[in-house]
Amino acid sequence: MVRAEVFPRALLDELGALRGAYGRVAAARKFKLLVRLLSMPINRGLELARLHDELLFAAGFPDNADIHAVTAGALSTFAKRVRRLSAAERRKLDDSGIAGTAGTHDFSYDVARWLLLQREHVTIDWRVMEDPERLDLLLRQTLLPVEVEAFDSGEFSTEEWVGLASAKSAAQTLAWLLGSAPERSPGAGIHAWRDLYDAAEVQLAWERRESPWSVSRNRAPVVRIIKRRAFRHAPMDVASHVLTPLTSIRRLRGSVAEQWRDACIATLTARAREVWPIVCANLEEIYVIPLGDGVDLCVVGVTHEHRLPLEANYGYVMFANGVPIGYGGATALGAQANTGINIFESFRRTEAAFLFAQTLRSFRTLFGVTRFIVNPYQIGADNDEALESGSYWFYHRLGFRSRDPIIAALAEAENARNAKRRGRRSSLAILRRLASSDVVLELPDVGETALFEERWVLTIGRAVAEHLAPHALGRRREYLTQLSHELCTLLTGEKRPLRPEERAGAVHLVPVIALLRDEVARWPSADRAALWELVGLKGRPQERPFAQASRAHARWWRAVANTCERMESA
Image (cartoon, rainbow, N blue to C red; front, side):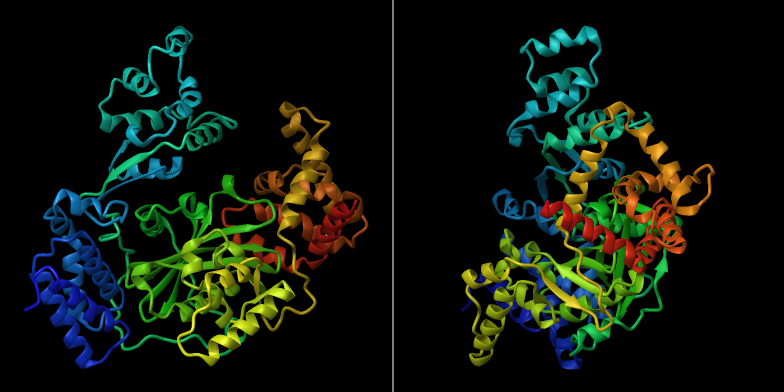
């Protein structure tokens, strides 16, 4: 007779084996297995985590309404199952994001603020702070002169001073610390505060309890549930598939945008991950793009203060029937975009290849790019998760190829060896070599557009710093204003006040344009006017128009590339 403690494992194995199997017989068996598993006590933490994974999977890709109902109900009350575990077994679920569990992480300032605004149970975990004194520089910003001597005396630890100065309970200390930030101060006050907080690596303990933002309960606000009949496969020719525009892109507004934003932030926060554009989401630029069969892609732009000078930076989260199944980002840079995808482990063995092809299609529609780049980290460089999953081959099957000809040849030889022997897997050593170079997918209309080397962004930053060196730090803004007016006149032929969006965009682009001032002065008037138009577009509420117009200005990108090459060879 099978021992009781092993029995759930056998059922979970059978349920897992049915992933991707659809039809009346498969659905009936899945439903029966789910009901049996939910009716029996599961006393081991790791087995309960496996059940949680299967419930998430079935909720995202349900065969029918009955399966969705039973999984949704079980996930909404999953914290009760966690509480039945012994303390030792419950600790095995720490940092899983599951309802009823706890976890500690050095969440960024913006995420910590979001957790507090959501009234989550978050406290500073002093026990695991390696160096609490890294908070002292931040705390100094709150001191009155009369407090300085006591603070510097050494009689108080950082934790003791926070307790003394805040007069708060442990549950309220974090709110006191973050509430001290100069939110309404002019200039760089809030930026400095944020940076000091993040540099301190404050460890926060999050007790998820019945949290609606746990992995178990977080959902995007979808209108209806779509049942599944099968998984879809990536097209044979992904590059050509991507050229077909998606026509149902919708920009969200108001409270609906906030709901999707919060679902995206919670998706990553519960898993202790962060994507900058999602953490600092621009509520004016959140798009939802249906990918079919109940899967939605939520693409999130970044707030103006966090925009990149030459690039347009976006994050995304993918939802299946409202259940988060993966995330990634896309950074449009002229005619190309840096991107990648991360499918959560609970949703492996689905239709990830098809969904990523659709995601690339979405970015093509949004930005008009003709080339996609995936950096080494995404395929395994300093990323054990990507390395062990063999993510290089995921991108290779979609048509991405290494930029390094030696690595490309190695990939073709290794791919041929794998094809000859069914089930053969590339060694970690081979995968590390394959992950040493970018991989690129070029669309059929790439034409003569040259690839813009990403390292040139650093080259430009260094050149701007050298250009501004003669100007004192406190006078840089004044000089930038003067420079903006001069370049506006040079490029448009008009001597006029700057429009609000031009002033906002000038911070990003004017220092770069100034490096090429002599060259752009010789351009035809239409090209000069189009370049200045980019400045105004950069300062608009949505960054998508900038990305599209930037891609179309080939002369600008050739000039920047040529300048970078000259600087590097000098």
